[in-house]
Image 1 (cartoon, one colour):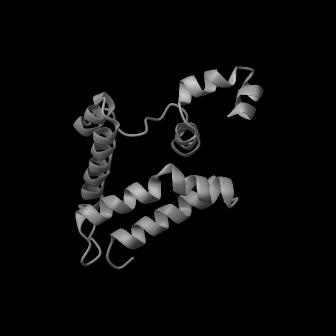
Image 2: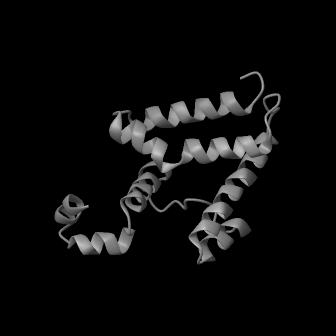
Image 3: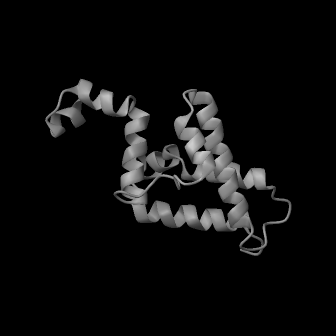
Amino acid sequence: MSLIAKRAGVAVQTVYFIFRTRDALVQEVHNQTVLGRGAPVVPPEHPWYVSMASDPDPVRAISTLVEGMHDVATILLAKAEPRPGLADRQAGDMLVALLGPEIYRTFVLELGWTREQWATWTAQTMVRELFAGQ
């Protein structure tokens, strides 16, 4: 955090004020590099997103976010035949795990994969794990 503050020409307290934690900073890097500048992390018009964003309790907010990813999984599974035995809940859990900043950080920042390599692997893994015959 101090190196980032130094390179940005601000006090380290400013970086902590904006991002609060190192994981929040990594999440924002993920958002900007993977999703693109200005792209929303999740569709803000969805009720689950509004609920998550406005809930002052972080535990409930995270639970709501995870439920939202399960809604996304349900939408995806309606597009093609799901893998036999795969429950919507499991598919949502896979999305939460594979699209989280921890996986991105591990593969790209720690293991040296390019963003494109990570995105390709993630997409291929999701297709293989979610849909039959893939």
